Image (cartoon, rainbow, N blue to C red):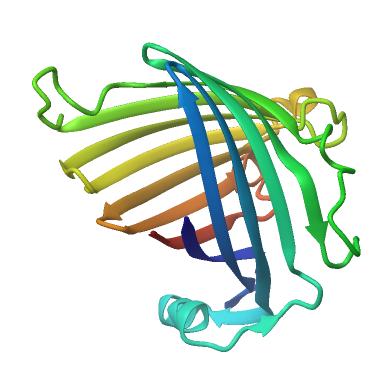
Length: 242
């Protein structure tokens, strides 16, 4: 069971001496459970939340950093009308040594306040995905915690949906300080298969401090890098694990 708050900015627009952003905040609550037998596991999860925001915020270049921090953390956000959502997920995983193979449905049942009046199965088939992950063992043969732990994965999401089908790649290197204390360096890429070289790069830094998980990420579309068009997103997530 976890509870988290995401803060992020998007819709970046340059001016001569100012920059304009949309500041966004998402509160989410998730609960999941799994049943395992040997190398096979079956699981289900409930994920829900709502959004708040502050649009068209102008930041002056002369005090950009202080304004950015002020609006991100200390200004009042307005709740987005009908932004509540609830998704019920189901999945299956099979472990083969350091590899894990998975099949998951992200929205077996879903509720979006602005679109539906009740839980619906409409997105169940379209949100089926499959993935393969690899990770090193965080412990040495005698049970000692290793200094470094590495993980990587590839995932196809929304595979049956030609409109929303995406592929995701990610890697993580974690410096393990203690059992529940670490620092992680992350790099990812996601795109649509038909426009494979027109996706987005994500770089991130995360830390685990006992039951708190804090992550900072920057998502940059390749169009921003190549011809300075499009929006990039900066996000901060703070999560408490029960």
